[in-house]
Amino acid sequence: MGHGEPDEAAAAWVMVEEWGGSSGSALSRTAVLTASASSLTSDRFGSRWGRIGSRVLGAFVPEGFPGSVTPDYVSFQMWDTLQGLSTYICAMLSTQALLGAIGVGEKSATVIGATFQWFLRDLTGMLGGILFAFYQGSNLDSDAKMWRLVADFMNDLGMLMDLLSPLFPSSLIVIMCLGSLSRSFTGVASGATRAALTQHFALANNAADISAKEGSQETLATMSGMGLGMLLAHVTRGHNFVVWVSFLSLTIFHMFANYKAVQSLSLSTLNYERTSILLHSFMEDDEVLTPQQVSKQEHILPFWSTWRKLLRVKLPHELVHLGAKASTLTHSDMLLIAKTRSYYTNANYFLLDKEGSVHIFIHKQAVATDVLKSFIHGLVLARLMQKSNSCHAEAHKWMNEKYSTFISQLKLEGYSTERLLSHSIVWKAHWLYGPLDEKTK
Image (cartoon, rainbow, N blue to C red; front, side, top):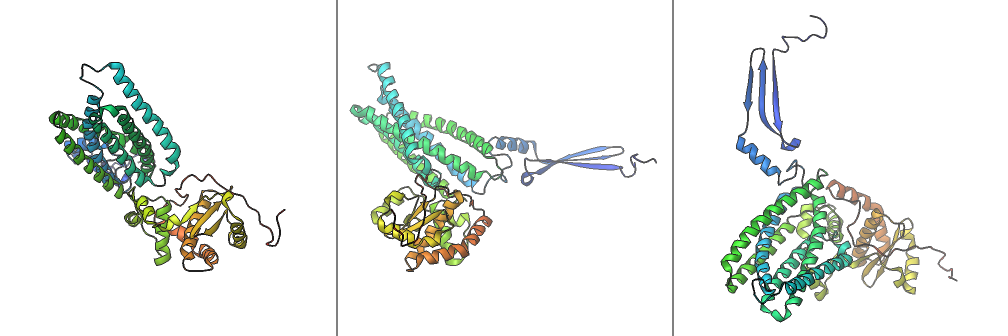
């Protein structure tokens, strides 16, 4: 036998397996083909219905599921779909009431009158969305969980306004505009937080696929909700008490499902509160909590902060004010900064402790990692202020000895340490130091 010719004895049989799936973690064997010199046998695994089911499921979940998404994806999407379903059922009831209020089906109603009312409603919503994005746009990333709840609460409030509109015909336009304004906040907040959550779920850099499949899931929930809503609207037509009981029951379930959806999230990004919780655990027990452990300690109810303000109770991260204005500094503040300047020689920030709070002044050349470091330094200082008179020196020592270890352990637990999710830092500063006895001219 010449060189390069096949060895017939070695190739007496060959077996080829077929595996189906979009990622290594989701592969399953579907067929085995075995060939000998005289025959070919084929064995298939799994039923045809099972393969069809997998294809249908593939239209609603990201490619590579479940390995391509975070573990909290399933629980969040389950509760999110349920809240979406209840929303669309409620929407049918409120829309029916609103259309009746503007005169649909009434002989005395005019087309131009109804069109003008609808135009004012939409115009108010558009302007409200612009104003909300202007005032709160930079905060939506840092508190995605809370704003997700706020968005759905405002949506419920908007539908409530629509349902109330027939009861107050003399104030119809005002009520319609208030409802539209409320829903405009929902559109901005929900869209922005959805983008943040999509990035969180995307383990395989598949944010676009997750977003597309989210759209498919929402479309399915919308169609189901509209069908059930139309049926409910037809059954309850003319029975106002039943309409209100149905609407309020669905709204309560909607808010419960939203809370459960948000509660199931275990975000790995660092915002004010998560950073504070992690630092507290590290300084107390020398350990870094997992995202799941931190999630259980977060305050996500939107009205919780308002109650704390009324009770004058502040969480540790609320004692730290990031991005303070240099123009607010007094003469005594400037002298204190000069006194503690040695602790911030190589930092692109400096800290000022004043009236029980820590004010962080960010240098104009600071980058994202400087902002994160300054906030952690501020939390350490705020914690030590209550225990020591030489808090700046002790905070400086802690940062030199422990900060790198803290950041390394955060990375090991899967946290994103490239930046702090904070409000937009508008005010920055530049500073120079001179001898303490030198007078400015």
